[in-house]
Length: 255
Image (cartoon, rainbow, N blue to C red; front, side, top):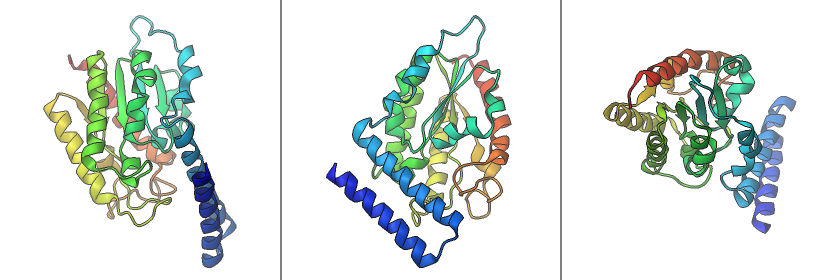
């Protein structure tokens, strides 16, 4: 706990010092403080409920078994998935879509909660969008091979339970607002190549958001994401037809 307080204080002091040094506008200062508070929340969660298993406990208890003919789809992911429902609720409304994204999560955290948040909901399809927070090191250092292995483990668990899989490309990212200087773009490109190769080899649908959204810096253009990482409504509008096409394709496949 002492470590948590130390980290929290360091973040707050760093935020204040940065704001003073750069003479941030009120809006920029608020964004910096929001990031510091977000990191504080993540740190607290890691020490109390590492995979945030309790996040959807009540919601999952209310999910009924699929109705006859229902083609239920679970969206598993991080803040990019979680924010989708907020940015464009109409995309999910009236459809058998269930959003199980949790902000800040890495692939090992998703793997831990995969049974309760995906398998037990008995979907026909799961769309897995994961990996960017591993590259950011949100829960510690992670090699691309480690991240890839966790995503594949989720895919294998799904298929073993009769669930069709859609593997998503990681979205482009030139930099991380909360961890600047990491230069994620080359790692994103390499991880996507690994995921696509696996999908092609194993008759799994791969949805390529990356190619539809990337700019000349190999990141997300400003008009598609407010912070270079998380899509805005325009960004999600690009993703939605790609996701629906991938779902339809997955449902047609026999395995």
